[in-house]
Image (cartoon, rainbow, N blue to C red):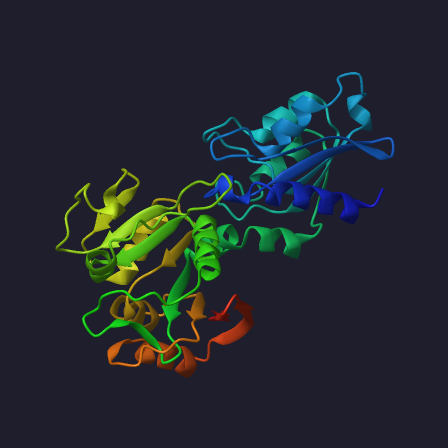
Length: 331
């Protein structure tokens, strides 16, 4: 039995549902007996049955339970949330052996699920493909380890580093392919944060317009002046919140207490600069067009200077259509 290969299969099962389970982690599970996988399952959508339950309920009842080994990417939960504890399902199923990829960092779970299974006489192995599983749940692990959500900032800039014209009015900067890449990035995040100037000038919808099922990110507006108006695109549905607080660390705490793992900031230079000055940026993404504005405009220069001064690490740079996408990490 190649436990790394089998765990890799479970990891692959988990990531197939990454846009639908958030803010929950992605989890995959499979059952192995007599040299083959006899059942598999994943956590498929937020609020739905967990991977272990889906996997166990699909297994052939004629297979002897003592012959089964359960592989699960993340430690099974031992508390009641939207679903009952997975540990109870595993114990009642009669399975006697389980291989767990990584301990769940959530304090409601961490180590307690493993203890419950061991106390029930189940043979528990922990620690297989840990880094791969943490990577597939990057935002989830970051939130629990750092006690705040992971923050990504995204900007679009002309070749001469402008964001908008001198009056703050939007200009078409990037290609349609780059725009679609932004929608895919939105789909990965739990929350999108913007400011009042962006709302006034752009009238953005700020949802993830993608061709696959996704839990739409919550939209948060930071403003003391703008009130909800359903004529404005941002307020077209009820999946938004207005926070009237200039203290960004308090804003981050409010979002953290709502149990969100990740934030995507899409705003103008003033608000983006404030996030950077407060050291509230973990990933910085820029899309740069080959076009120049040519005239004076609203510049990203001060923002880009902070990225350089703080020595953000360039992790990738590649072309999307005619634009260059650069990704930096604040490690």
